[in-house]
Amino acid sequence: MAETDAAALALAKPAPRVPRSTAQRISAIRRWTPVLWSIRIERPADYLFQPGHYARLGLPVDTPEAAVWRPYSIVSATTDSELEFLLVLIPGGAFTSQLAALREGDTVLLEQAVFGFFLDSQLAPGDTLWMLATGTGLGPYVSLLRTPGALDRYARVVLVHSARHADELAYRDEIEAPAAVSHGRLSYVPIVTREAGVSALTGRIPQLISDGALQAHVGRTLEPADSRIMVCGNPEFTTEMRALLAERGFTPCRRNSPGSMLFEKYW
Ligand SMILES: Cc1cc2nc3c(=O)[nH]c(=O)nc-3n(C[C@H](O)[C@H](O)[C@H](O)COP(=O)(O)OP(=O)(O)OC[C@H]3O[C@@H](n4cnc5c(N)ncnc54)[C@H](O)[C@@H]3O)c2cc1C
Ligand SMILES: NC(=O)c1ccc[n+]([C@@H]2O[C@H](COP(=O)([O-])OP(=O)(O)OC[C@H]3O[C@@H](n4cnc5c(N)ncnc54)[C@H](OP(=O)(O)O)[C@@H]3O)[C@@H](O)[C@H]2O)c1
Image (cartoon, rainbow, N blue to C red; front, side):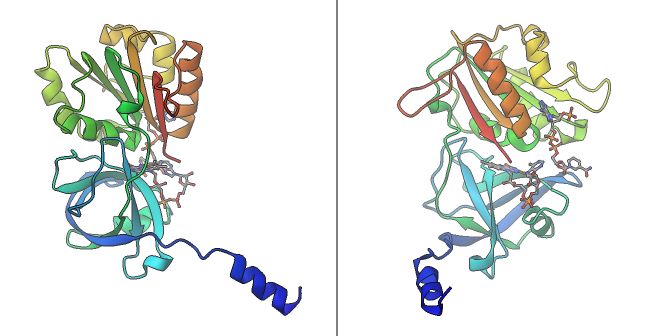
């Protein structure tokens, strides 16, 4: 290629996008296991979100133009003065390996915008909201539970969280406490898949729904007429759930057309 053509091409190529961001201080770290932890960071005054939105975090802080950026669901209430995230360490992961080395007082980049459509307002009105999560996919539901009034439009709420081991059931105490005094309005179903005798139900969520064990445990049916369902986490899980629910008559949410099922895929 002639030198002038190469120069013209280089000019035509858009420069890589450098997100508009601010460096936010980590105010607290809570370790659930050696590879699973939550962080809280300062929240800019104009950073507005709804439960289900995700933020984009970047590192390293001193070179934003070369930083690695990743999306993370916001765990905190919309009323919280800080932002909280639930994170799992991916061995060799470009972002989480850097983040895992940070301590309270260190900083992380926060993109100014919020993102996503995993918002329960996308769903048509319904009687029972089912919130299904694997691993760190629990985060958006904690934000919904923590945000005053966010779940008021549902008569019943069922939160199902699947983790490999019992100590990975993050926020368990925080969820069990309101469930215990909710007179059956909030059901919390922890599922541990790689330890025997820890949870009332064992096995993967799609299978537990297919054979009716989950519905029997909760004492509710799962029908598109009155159930709305949010599914978040492992991509194979969300794909399996989409097929299973579509077979049962659940419909996806589209622009200007609320549906009965909603998905967030983490990788
Ligand atoms: C909308 C959205 C919200 C997300 N929210 C969260 C969140 O709240 N908490 C969280 O920990 N992660 C979340 N993620 C995943 C996160 O953005 C990163 O992908 C993850 O932290 C790995 O980044 P990394 O740079 O360390 O690893 P990378 O170097 O990017 O990843 C290496 C590989 O690990 C796999 N991988 C990525 N994430 C996971 C995971 N969580 N579990 C198992 N394997 C994975 C993928 O195959 C990936 O190619 C979210 C992703 C999306 C799209
Ligand atoms: N000790 C460690 O080093 C350690 C520990 C945990 C995580 N990690 C890292 O963190 C990453 C994420 O692990 P994670 O445990 O948070 O997430 P995960 O592998 O997605 O597992 C979380 C839960 O989802 C279930 N699940 C997985 N695939 C499913 C599917 N297709 N349908 C229904 N349920 C499904 C798992 O059940 P199953 O048990 O049946 O798969 C488990 O109960 C791992 O890839 C690993 O890199 C490391």
